[in-house]
Amino acid sequence: MSQDLKVALVTGAGSGIGRASALALHKAGFAVAAAGRRASELDKTVAAVQGERMIAVPTDVTDPAAVEALFARVKETFGRLDVLFNNAGTGAPAIAMEDLTYQQWTNVVGVNLTGPFLCAQQAMRIMKAQEPRGGRIINNGSISAQTPRPNSSPYTATKHAITGLTKCIALDGRKNDIACSQIDIGNAATEMTERMTAGVAQANGTTMVEPRMNVQHVADAVVYMASLPLDANVLFMTVMATKMPLVGRG
Figure (tube, rainbow, N blue to C red):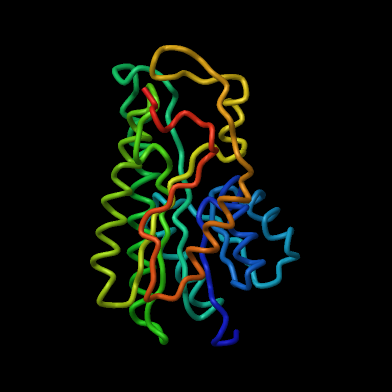
């Protein structure tokens, strides 16, 4: 691989925001490692670019050994890592907090918080040791990192925690030229938000259809953040459907 080639790793790259971002980064000139749980869906992401400068690495981000193997594969294949997009995420059923099971809670915490932590650890180890030194970690925070929806305690708690993790990585990574960013996304049109077209619960007890936006706008924002020189950083960015109920929610 050319030493001038920038390398990005995207988790949750088998669908939605992850797939769109992996393809956009590739189009922008990055070599890309697409990680996720479903090998068949990752293969579809890679097939979209005919496999050139992109690899699929099936990974469970909640498993420390699997995450270690993922980053070893990236380093072995591309020689370095310039950008990590911690995008993989999941939610729990939208039911009352008191009715959630322990397993439902821990599943969300594992994917949404422990996974980004484990991936950030491995990324920082590579980034501080490579030449040229440094890199960028982008965390998917979600609108729920700012304001909750009804019956969303596991998802909202982990996304608020991502904000703290982002600030810690940004602070602790400085000495090694590692920048950290967070993108908070509101209502990108993906399979995950398809239910919004039929109406979702609001804080005032009503149900309403919520506007969505093209997921490509999110991917373009990720490329912008990823392409900045390491002496500049977008610490927090919110990209949202203009008419979604965030401002004034509740």
